[in-house]
Length: 295
Length: 243
View 1 (cartoon, one colour):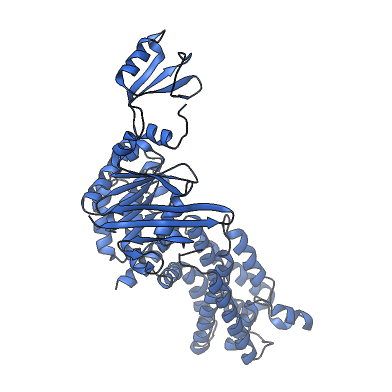
View 2 (tube, rainbow over the protein chains, first blue to last red):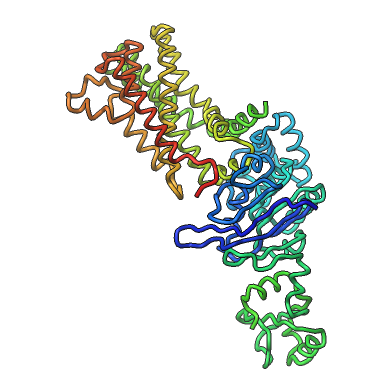
């Protein structure tokens, strides 16, 4: 598949703060790539550069083969961007909002209405005919995503599009995003929610201090962690724990093998101390790879 | 055709917003009515005619400086600006859409006083000139507002900037009162406000009151302000690719 988005050694500085220090990654058509990382890692700065809002100090970025600085007009025709903390006209209904957004991209009023109906219906908002200010946060986010999906842009940049959405509605958004990806679009999505990344991403790029720390499928990233199982246990902790994250009155404990896990559980004084158990997931990998807690 | 829809798309959201926030428009009309009553009470029909004529200019200036300034400021604050940058919309289309979105205000603040001026006996040709001056006032006001608003890195409360600017340029200088009412040294000071030559041009075009500036001086000053504000705006205006 052809490369849709390419970041090559992107660098950006804001005064004394070095936001990007050579960030590189690639995303292909028909791929959903999640940019993950702690706050201030440089995810939003990277997205702002790739959406032609910011000029990089160094490196280059391309969208569908067009340089984001030299050929920004071509890039803008082909992308859709939902910024983080994006504010809408709260007095508009979801339908009016989607129609206005589509008209801003050159669709006629009639065509914009048709598309708005189609995508609001797909995201379960066809009955929400009230101003956005009267809707739940989740419904507003879904209206924003509906507009993005209805735009027919080839590359979508969505900065935390599902924050504040309840679990059920989030799955509707995920389904719609995956359908769009299956139809050939490329989606770059930033999120703090590793469960979301695990569910929707073809590729995860972990960004730390302005660089890409890891780039690969969620499964690849999990496989980089030297643990296979995890357990959440109530304190007091058994002695001699090699890999545990302290959560105050409980611990997350990691194990290399099933036998190690079984041995640990069998050694607990009180079996009710074991609160949860399972395989290591992307969130664990994220925390462990960032060096944020494995003891 | 696509460009037309893009312009109208920007205006569409604004128009729906004003439709549901109609009290702002009612406020504009109440101001006009209030000023008209004050003028009649203190100066009769002659004062009324003057107030109506300069209201066209003050109204257009206010739309440019206050309404458009606040709208674009809100777009910056809400990231609508970034959203539009990353789209096929050009800067010229965006600006045209924002202006077009103020049609309800143009009706309340410009068209209503223009109609009132016609009823008060201002002939069509001077009214046409007045409309042209109003257009220049709108452009100048918006250029000046945007030159300030777009320089604010983290805009929090745009109206805290544009509202005082509006009062400073319409209530204080000789807009609602003739320039001749000011003593000579203050007339020179009044020229520091871009609304002074615009109001003088309106008085010259309609004969609604005595003007102190001659037509060439008023026109030259207005043109200079327009040029100056356009230059100030050019330095601030960035449609993406910010450093």
